[in-house]
Length: 381
Image (cartoon, rainbow, N blue to C red; front, side, top):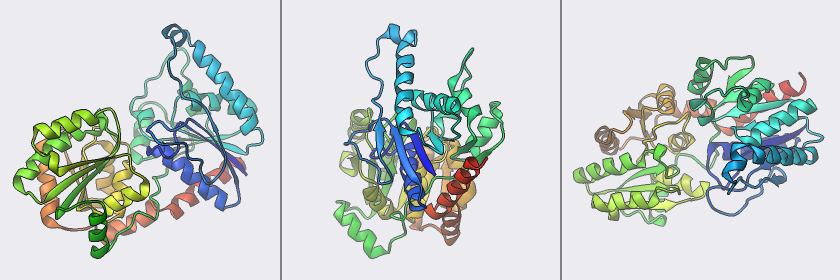
């Protein structure tokens, strides 16, 4: 088969809809399929990285569009035509397309696929559904959704929400994110060595990995961490990620007198994230909204218990992993601080039951098999 992935992100962007397309391409290539990509360049910083699975046709992001052009959708029409011409070249011989998330790139690809009678799979990650509002008279996302040969969701909660919003249809399924093998439980000697290499001198470590954005909730984490530091001085907070809130978060930490105990690591590679999560005593996820937080699953795979806000993704992870995921109310820094202190005091790592659930639901081999079966079913339909 020739499989073309259409995605708004690819690594080094660390969003789920960047990581999965790269992974899925590698799995397909290993099974003998030809893989290509149509994608936007990185949005989070860092240079362009070409996936190992196949070539990429880059589509520049829309920037500086005049208001009138945006209002009249002149720019959208022109960009749709450009995307269609690129697909003529990139996907002219495609067996199927795999569309990731939403936006003009994905919607234009869905229209192209329908017109050329090329089946496509659509994978949804969260915001497309949580913020879904049908637009009249024409809604291109709804059209792309209904025209897909199959739709996969990143979580059970996300699929249930889609059905609740009137997006029920045939061939819906949940395929959880795959956690790479670099995320694994390490022995104490390795964890201590990695802490030293990362410059962590404190005995206890809390880690958060997320873009610095209002929805990530780091302002509540920093407030909670100030309370943690009042109770014990042997703990450091590391926040991995980049974004527009960095300056304000640094100012907040300074105002609370905890600057010396907080590390803003910036945008770090996945192998570095794996070291941080393995070294961590607890992983904090105070986000206001998550469908299925891959970073939290990566932490669990590394042996670190998770303290999460009560967003849908956190609740679903708690249902799967039980006591290894503590859930507290969103925006409640006091409850978050208490849960973090409890996790630090216990010193416990994740349980064998969690390891079993991870192997069954989140490891690459299991996820690759699900996507291969999906592709084969779509291609032969």
